[in-house]
Amino acid sequence: MTDRSAGGSVAVPAEAEDSPSTRAGAARARYGRLTEQARSIGADPKTAVARLPELLEGVPFPGEGDTTGYLSTLAALGAGDLTVARVVEPHLDAAAILHQAGLDDLLTGRTAWGVFAAEGPGARLQATEGPDGWTLTGTKPWCSLAGVLDHAVITAHSGPDTRRAFAVSLREPGVRVADVDWAARGLAAVPSGPVEFDHVPATPVGDDGWYLRRPGFAWGGIGVAAVWYGGARALAAALTEAARFRAPDQIALMHLGASDIALHQARCVLDDAARVIDSGEATGAEGGVLAARVRGVCAATVDTVLTTVGHGLGPAPLTFDEEHARRVADLTVYVRQHHAERDLARLGETTLEEAG
Image (cartoon, rainbow, N blue to C red):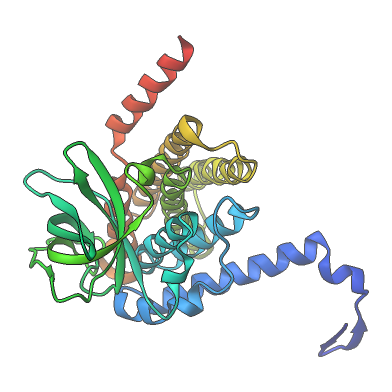
């Protein structure tokens, strides 16, 4: 291979083309491009959906040897724009679910997928099997971007005490996205309201309970944590940028150090989680504990960075810098997918049971 630069031609040994440092440099460049692509799209879900093929080129499935690449992709998108990451993350999760179920053929074409698995009081989605297959009827709450997406993996009640996942086209005539008073200031372009289904055809994805039993259920939650980390990393960069324009005092340096430690902790647990997942150890209860720990560390990192950046920079960027203000609002909403003390209490209960 010959590297042609302004200084002339330099021969590069063939073995150097695939060296660890070369691969690491290529990966950093790719993630940097992803961040800039997401940043250029901004809070525009429709454009993000249209550019999914470009954003997802070469992204590996988790658990197949390059989970680091999977998580790094999500972190890079989160660092660019959290609305874009909010579109891409569930699409990747749906793709991984269908892949695990052996239904890769459903992913053909330029289609955008979501995952709707939340439950809520007063809402019930019932799956019924008939002569022509399965259909869904009822209401599913918390369906993010249902009006923009093409398909979704959706959980529904298949019996009095059972639930099953289904692949559904959101373009079927029996699907109605309900109006919602979306008052959010963060992720304002990502409404998450209910969707009503009326005898909508559905393809089973696994059997009863498979959606929760599969190893990837825990891995999906770790993917969300990677997005939080990416958003926090971009937010903390504002502290460094501010220090370039104004010599930092001791307090500013303390904020920089506190953010750096928090981000380092999150990066370490994400890297370790990727290693454990690829080793085949993050299955069953172990996978659930791993996800709880990773999500807890990453959520704590977000809390730390939001605080240090807010204290370090004051109100000016929140009131005059649109991108910064939106990132703060988006990250504040996004990280609340972690249920704070309640999730920590569940983890504490698990660790107590393990201790005997």
